Figure (tube, rainbow, N blue to C red):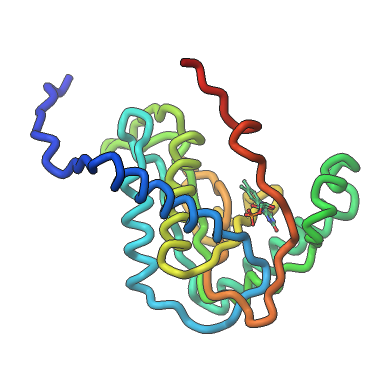
Length: 223
Ligand SMILES: Cc1cc2nc3c(=O)[nH]c(=O)nc-3n(C[C@H](O)[C@H](O)[C@H](O)COP(=O)(O)O)c2cc1C
């Protein structure tokens, strides 16, 4: 057992109500501009920006503070090519019969297909891994708690940080994703969670015209 140590909440800031409202509205306006983009420019992105966005993701809350995530940032054209080839092979099977008709119908309005050129064109692929369990220095397994919830929150923060920095991202989930462990030499306690394709949008990029549910449909207040 380790005794807890405590420190003052030195970095918390409270804002006066009007400033709080302004900040919340400004964040909402910015969040509303975020879109998943599937057409990328091949322009390079500063690595330092990606590093800061990953640091922001690393501030996410996690079950028992186990921080059960690992981000593999792939900029190598050769490795991106291998990921594209493997992902397209999986996706060809997915669209060619493995996916249920219901799933394919849900994807139809997005116009997605097994063709994934963005996996090579975008400057960075951030492959998010979830650590299903930890490994102590002596090799014994450490149980991890709420892994998917924690990694999902960290990934959301990463997507928001990338958007805030002026980049776009595509959340990509080739199914299944086991090939990423092999291609990226990740250990057996990690499972691929998703790929974030990151960069600038292509000049001619277009996005599906979708709507977002209004507040009344996504929230219930009990007062
Ligand atoms: C967990 C998850 C998996 C997704 N997988 C894919 C994918 O494999 N391919 C794809 O083109 N988009 C994928 N998306 C993107 C969604 O289609 C997109 O977020 C949704 O249509 C809403 O559009 P928006 O992000 O522009 O608001 C995924 C999103 C999430 C959250």
